[in-house]
Amino acid sequence: MADALKEARKKLDNEANKQIEIIFRALALALGEDGWSIKRLEKVANEIHDFVEEIGKVDKSVVQICEEETGVCLIPEGIDKSWEELTYLNGEAWDKYLEKYSKTMKPKIFRAYAIRASQKMIDWVRPQFYASIIIAMHRLYGYGPERAARLYARMHMIEKAADMDYKKLDEWLINKRHIKMVRPAGERFYFEVVK
Image (cartoon, rainbow, N blue to C red; front, side):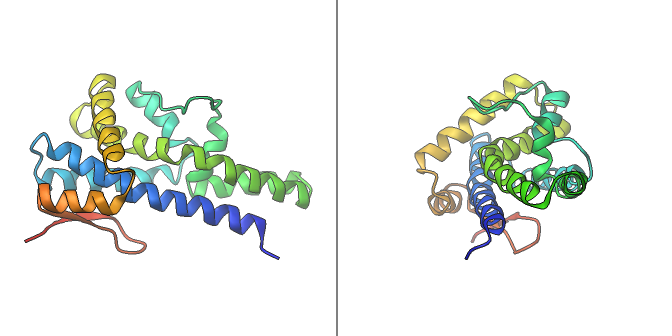
């Protein structure tokens, strides 16, 4: 019999990995339309990675920090705002959260809670990644709500045009920008020139 918690976590991890492949390629294409160099794009990628490392140590969600720092709210339609539950995607903060509840809940109830939380977080994967991009653009280049909304809209149009297919986005990056996204396992993604 499969472990339901492991399955729920695996499904969430798979969705997160899929969205990374799509969203960050769309970002490179959208910024490329504005003539951004690979060096500038790398600066944004590094700021995103630095922020993701920072967020793993705090008890706030990426979406919450985005709203507080930039004024941009990325709550998906039909989903209630629950900052505490969003710490699920924050590494160490989520571990502390689980530890707190594992001591006060009966094991079966806690396990059911952890499974349900994993399932609910799938709806938050895209907003969390978009929030990290908006925060990076705000910190580096002063992006406010209007510029962030324009970038978000362009990225979304690019994703839809590619039918949410990262391989198609890869082709476009290579053909239009002459770069590709490289994502070694367990390491930071980066962009490199294709000759």
